[in-house]
Amino acid sequence: MNTKKILTTLFVVFAGGLSATGISGVIDNTANHKRVTVQPEIPAQYASYSSANVSSAGNIDFTYAASLSVHAVVHIMTKYEQKSSVYDDFFGGLWDPWGMFGNPNYQYKSEPIQASGSGVIISDDGYIVTNNHVVEDASSIEVTLNDKRIYEAKVIGTDPGTDLALIKIDEKELPFLSYGNSDSVKVGEWVLAVGNPFNLTSTVTAGIISAKARNLNILGRNSVIESFLQTDAVVNPGNSGGALVNTNGQLIGINAAIASNTGSYLGYSFAIPVNIVKKVVNDFLQYGIVQKANLGVSFDEIDSKLAKEKGLAKIKGLYVTSVLENGGASDAGIKTGDVITKIDNSDVNSTSELQEAIITHRPGDKVVISYIRDETEKEAIVTLKNNSGGTDLLKKEDVTDISLLGATFENITNDDMQNLGIKYGLKITRLDAGLFKSAGIREGFIITAIDKKPIKTKEDLSANLKNKKGSVLIEGFYANGIRATCKVSPRC
Image (tube, rainbow, N blue to C red; front, top):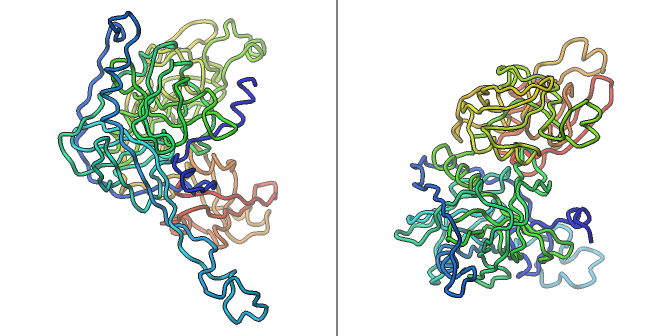
């Protein structure tokens, strides 16, 4: 089976322990937005080592890393309240053509779903990193340490875009893993995966780094960051949120997914690099949400076909197809047709490499962009901006549902109303990364209704999205008169 075929049947390890309860469905992944208290940054620093641990026999020694990791990796049990059409009536199983004993189509019983996964303690005072899909929308989160102590955990922050979450238990002097540096990880390097597959607690497997900066398109959400470390360490359902560590016992990734057409390990597993993890965790603690920065360009990966078509001398870098007006790249002089080759002296030849380079920064940060124009190498200092085109850092309480849409709106004109035969609507004049763009909506779309309620102003839009959970139905028209509908989740 070739790699392309395998990757088309990717199976994301959603909370792992669903298999333990016989539930085969996927839980609705609606983001859990809760107000948080700003906390100081968890003290952590990178450390580098010249070589891996070697045993007295001259072999790679995993015992040191394993002994550190098993005590810092926890078992997470989550519960979800879900409505199911279970008829809860003594006569529900009888033939009842007259409805004397109730109608099973309208009787519901709340059936809690239990799932499980893993998490990594990153500080001695109880902060734990896991995957967003492990804890998202859970009604309760129970954490079991390796010594079998059990705690209730609270959510500090969740981010579907990186599939990361931070939770906390009330305890002190806990064993924890220190951050490594995923940028320095090399293909072929030995690693350990530590987690709780199939509820088998404190399981350690070994493998090597098979590839870096893998973009698998498995999260399926707006503004997602996928730049995975690929390994052949065995990972199965229940490993989600567990640790990927080097032989020095440092955390270099959070296990998140496997590639499989069966739901079990077939040789490919993927972890979120720890450099992304560190940045997201610190954002949760300082701001309550992830601060996402934009370069302000659209681009294509360069292959031999594109290089020939554009007359490029080398198959290298990312070809800029458009530049956002008033974006950071535009302000720095980047133009359509330029080829970006490096960000802060790190090569970028793929979407995932660029995403990983940018996600570790915040709006207002400056990065050095190396690019080629007319076969001449140039450099520019770019100030990264947020989705609104500014450099302000946001607090969670400042973020509204409408700000997640990634769009700029204006009221429709009389000409619009006359041409389309409508009396009201809100036109999208610009699209950035956000829910609308992810859903396939294009610039120029005129929103006329959300969940059948008329939309005349931005205030209407905000009011109809406020506190919504799950998908909402967007209705409207394009300028050519084509009517369109789509579903968008304001909590994605």
